[in-house]
Length: 407
Image (tube, rainbow, N blue to C red):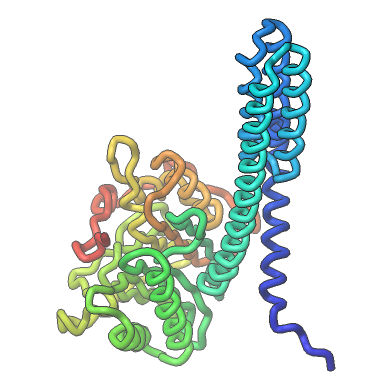
């Protein structure tokens, strides 16, 4: 049996990176074509200006703008072609315009030097683009491994998820979510790791790994939370913690919720009322139980057909617009909630991005769970806005406990 070379993953990553770069260039379309031709147009303008005005040496030094600009829009070959064109045209214009030989030689030498430097800069830029493409490919693979796709249907539920990382190039961050179907019912978690970057990603991976294992093993939802707590106590630093909401549906028509210092979920009833699932005895975040000595408590509430549960991270509720106003999530849910979770979250996510002006400054995750009705028709109909009401206690912005406001 032939052996697979040990370096095949790197080669595959390189191929995917090249494919991504090619696709990116193709997507640029006409704009990219214009930018590629622009250096040649600049050289042509300089030549026409020289011929029209007879300025001689006054215009010839401007030819260096062609290869210099080509370094930002073309590859090394394109830069060399533009530079060679500029040198040839400069030599012709200088010789026919009576420019002294020494001065003409100085101009042409400067053109050659700028062309060489521009070609090297273009080569380095291309290499950085390929490295970036490879990093994005690896980041996407890491995201798929860490934040596994949530199926559209799990048990009696329809689900949807939307995730946006603040580090746009990395596409992964410290927010986490997971939903699994276990012998003890459907269980899910949404959480937020303190901090950002690779350490936060590592902590999120640890939490999700323990959750997925414990969710299948432990019949009690509090035991699942205890497993995560013990694991974090062994692996986190003294200043690290994770806020999270762990929920489960054991199949009894009731929903179990354990809130560990996280923003309260939103319950959307079948009638359209939106209400925050507050807890009278908030527990500390995961990883801080040893400092407070306070254990989380299990909340049990009815969850009937047509009801929905929205879990989210503080990147959603703390998103600000240009006037420094927070995004009103509960009101947004009331406007956009419908019988199809994917459509609801798409509308919420688009409105959230419009609220902040197009780019989030913190990781944001939304996970929506809807219990299907037994005799629900196949076509999905969104409820009209007039039929949706926001509960009084959740109409205002939901303010999480102080420990959820992470630096």
